[in-house]
Length: 335
Image (cartoon, rainbow, N blue to C red; front, side, top):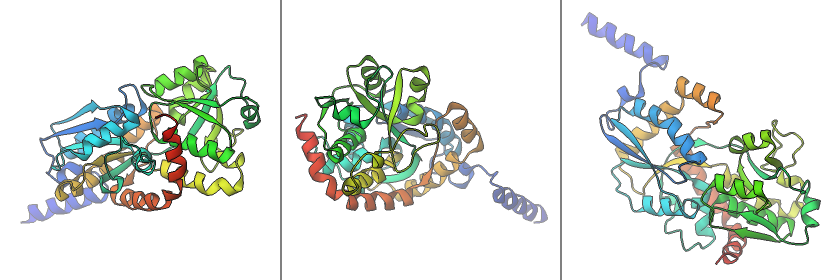
């Protein structure tokens, strides 16, 4: 009994210091296979983040394997539609762009065959500043240069994703014409179009574009957020170049974009699986080794618990209704 008491005391002490593996707290996924579907291209930022965090999810869940596959198309809509119909046993999860899930139905997109508020939200993985960049040799330096183009701003897009919708709202606020060119395969593809001059600019996360900026291939043009960022202190935000009366619509879409990359499951996912995953994934995301790897690879993590993400999704979905006419008009231009 003394040994048992000492052992329990030691375990409690270790737990207090966070050294008990999360897998020891829940056996739901022990020795099982977790199918980890990435809604994006194999070379994209979603996949890079998935590959970084997957070993830690395996470590903390005790899973035999975390099997990563890619399902791309329609700016993430193909993957979302597939997850909507997936088994609810909890063994298939996805890394997806939450803004796309919210905005596509608001736009009346025929490709969105789901209700974003019904998915199971496990955790936010990351959210970071997004930036509108132009090519390194582009003559565009300020919004006044865009006004003087004498034609529509050409935006290469991988589909009707959050960047597509953000640009629609931004150019509606600016009162300037924009030409959306869809059909690109991912961020690398749209970046190449901008660098070559086939497109005027595209939106990406700061970490995805900093290398091209450093090499001179691209140049930051606008911060798609509320504040300037330390890495580009001279680059204005979208709020600095748009009329104040248009700020409500911009703020609505930026609040949506703040949800960014999240781990999600199908609707009505097994309750035990949800409880286990939320606990274990957050433990994985706070693993000191993963944090160190994140800093080293310059792929930031901003984890947020699934319950809070669910609350935010519901709030944003309600507040974003005013965007619907703008988004629907944007979709019509490419149909």
